[in-house]
Length: 235
Length: 199
Ligand SMILES: [Fe+2]
Image (cartoon, rainbow over all chains, first blue to last red; front, side, top):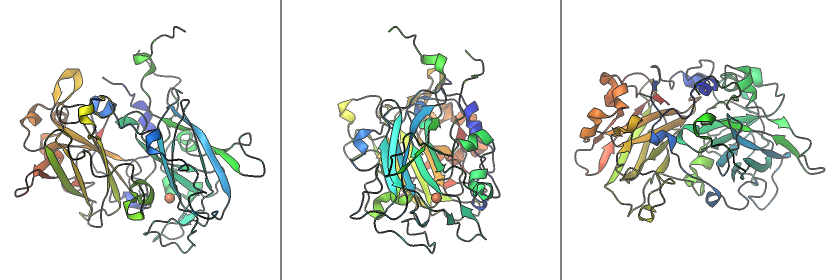
């Protein structure tokens, strides 16, 4: 019962990528054991509208005041590898504020917190796979303990998709960031086309005049082999 | 059709969850409302109640204090949440999520999963799928918890694919003095390294 082709997994980075120092003691040393896809892997948790409250997708309106920084929209579709939309799927995002500082207690970067910005949000895709967030463009930040290593600006994203096998945690980057070639996390993805999947694009058509730029970011999850389950259309 | 899929799109690659996910994904300490937590089955869900306690360790044997462990399992009758809307099982969530503590520890509370069909309909022994996320994991790691007191392990089609000398890394062991408590550690690398899967 191979429902989800495994070829697409080649897009992922390796576990061990020594330039990203933290992989050295955390990457497994033995190869993964390949197993068949059983019902446990084909099934998956169902998170939808019930798990999102109004306002969860607008990170600029979670406090009394307006956060500092450049307001942006992040909008796109969640699709599978066969270009089918993934409806009703939950997206969780988290990010640094405009100064490059996270709310997280472990973040000690010498940049100010913003009392009007937490940087966490949720959205659910609509019936055609579309989602939208309003947020602040995150700042870049240095990696603590390393000499002059900086992360390009990014938004962390976590998705479930329809199955245990479609689970994805990734990061969205901004077009043309000069830090890309210096970032071992971004560069850990070996294939250039796959790397560019993580880079959003400026969407002038959806940009709202005198209000906010829009960045388009489509997310492509693993998908079931089309010919295995698609019925002919009769309409 | 077993041919290559010329039209398949490149999927979005995985990136590390990083060290700063907690205020979004496990926000209890930040006053947030978690999507899910260590409670995979609420009190009253049918089945044998169990707890699973363990810790995540790195290649030096040091605890990993910033990992996230997600669990996914069938209910006591082998049904998955969301697939079978049986009202008798409204208290079963099926999904759990824990941030590791300073000592690497995590803890789930649930019911013992039932048997789920495997490849070609052969039954699988009771198991819980785990996904492990952490700084330094560019892609999450997938493993399974099996239970030491299950005779069905001997015929489990997935355990059968694992080197017999390494199967012990997938077995949760009952704690001697605490009924319903199992211990399951995750060792990312090195001595006693956990077996990880790809499907
Ligand atoms: Fe980050």
